[in-house]
Length: 265
Length: 346
Image (cartoon, one colour):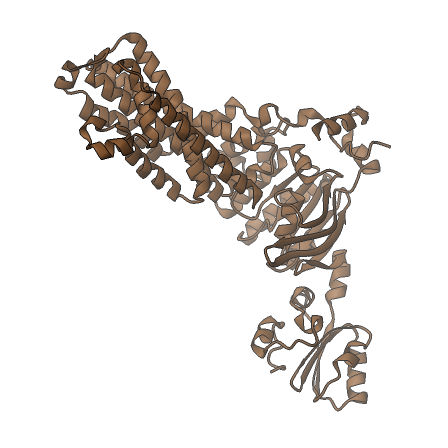
């Protein structure tokens, strides 16, 4: 007689390690994402295009900012824009997948929800990295943007990692709206956040009341922080506070909706 | 909880002939005890007790909204019963799913349009610790030829065979199919069932939900009829058919005694509407004898039920017998009655 609850199989090796997270799954997700032309255009082509139009004229190349020039400043902004668009779109794919019943399908596999989120985040980061690299390579090849070599690497890495904040945002929106609308909401809201965060127009150009308001929007802190190594000068702790506050809000929102989602069917 | 499971596993014999071991000492493949499922005020499943032994091929037959999908969801651990207990191979459903003991072919959805067929199978295989090779399950499901095609470009039948291939990956002991041939053409249906049948012959336990009587009849060893969240019949397909086969006796009779009619042996259902009565029964002679000898019934009419009508009779709404004091309006009644009986009962 075998133990009543030993189960027919009962072996640990039937459950994958890391809850089911595997690099091969990320590879398949990336391939899938690259197949979606709209995503690639919006996250990689558009930021590069913006950089070419707005960032690389001769006067910007001549004007100095901190340790570099204005072109480098704009290049960082555009790379950040591309990266956050990539990570938030990656997160928001859960909306499409839920609509297609894929999330439900995944629930009859051993994949753990946390591993699923990790796969989404990793995929978003890969796409985000391609946006950052594309913008920086164009900036480099155009010979307009200038800053010390370590800042090219440092700012690129900082904004790439920082863009994870928006993976949480994408997940939150994706779980909040079970429809294809999630992508539209992401695109539109990021445009607003980018203006308010000073990615497209320097905040010094805004009127005072608007400038005060802008300091509370989600891209403000991250944008100021990734520019700091270039701009230098006085470090403002409200930037970090802004980043942390929004990270908490987006993560809490995503977890809250995620819990709701797995609770019902 | 995982610690306890591992401890239990440690006591199990190390032999890998698990299937054989299961056949002798294993718990039932599926066991539902007093399962109820409520969604708000709607009670989708109203007390199901149900046991499937390893190796059985069971059809879960019933009309739409009978609670078939709700029940399957609970067996898969996608939802939990409001009350009662569900066990799969003696385990909690989620645990059974994680171990790859049970998999399912869902009714619709569950696929990503922007992946290819082969990518979808590979992706799913990566989610398990151990699976059959993707090429093998694709071959068995008959989708090797469309491996490179995007899922969004596949027909309904092809998508269903893809779902089947995905379900085969963990080499599950139990396979659940929820309305697997819905929306398929005749040829797609035939080749799909051909693949399932080969699988069943290899000893896999299969439970499929369907509202096609012919499918239940042709492919199941056992048919479980569900109606309004309850099991109304359970047996071999021949037994259920015998149960369902009956006759209807119609007559015109003022002031019919419903109680008396219902007490005639073999009477299954009585409907009284104005001066029209309809009795569904196994022994039409007894009903006819009573009506002609004991009452003033006239215009007597006896008809045999077709298989399809019998199925409807067994699984259809039976408000009339369930609540004798209650008298719904004619409109709601006639919408619920069997095809063909409206004319006699107006």
